[in-house]
Image 1: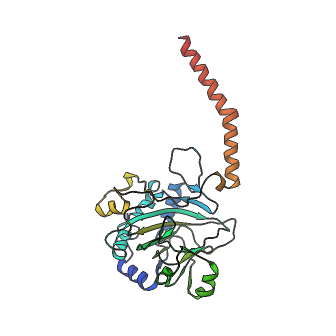
Image 2: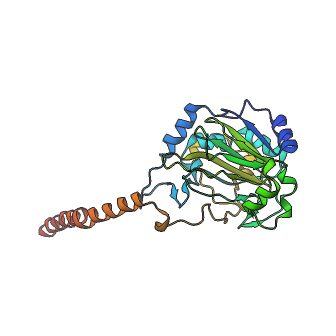
Image 3: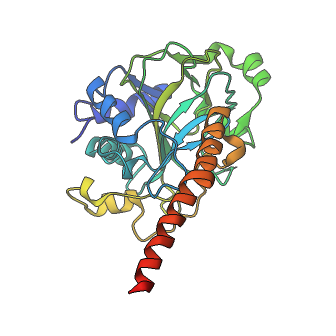
Length: 296
């Protein structure tokens, strides 16, 4: 299913070229957003579970292998229209660099930055970012500096300090307070961020897709073959068939120390349950079974 089939490829590419970004409300239906959340079980954290699962960081939740778990996400990421947009804007060669469904926690501070990078270093690649809102966004919204793809090369590092934006480009900030299912596409050289906000009872949840013309490397891509009905040469290139995938998954910093207090308490409680009840039960059960076998 092509969720973007109603979009005009030429219009989108022209708008990005002349206006830094393309924005359209409610491209993905609310029903399909619900499917994504159900298919990914957002955010059902489990440990030592043989499955494709999300990761918790200091700043939120991230599902960096969503196309292997959600058919709806896979349909969006591999849609013909998305590939056509990339072909038109980037050129004949392009590859899925990264994708993730994520929720940004209250109080998280994302610096102004560009996404034209690999291994945290800026690269002269040509690329696009696609963002789909999976909630109505009235705070913590995505922001971009208009025309910044034209001058971001003047900054040697991907991250740009707040005071520089405040002093020099505050009049160029565009904010996207859009409804659920809205789509934003922009040149990955553009300076952008998620606006900081404070609301402990709400998280902005979005789908992020990054594509550029470096076809030789990307984050690892895990696919579910049942989700893909037809794989042509363009899709093989896009997914990186036969190419290395050694870039680290974002977010890079993860571990027990990035878990929140409630999940740590849940892990400790389950460990205590296993140590004092489940493990002894299975050991006793196993020993009784072994005794029966030896008696024979």
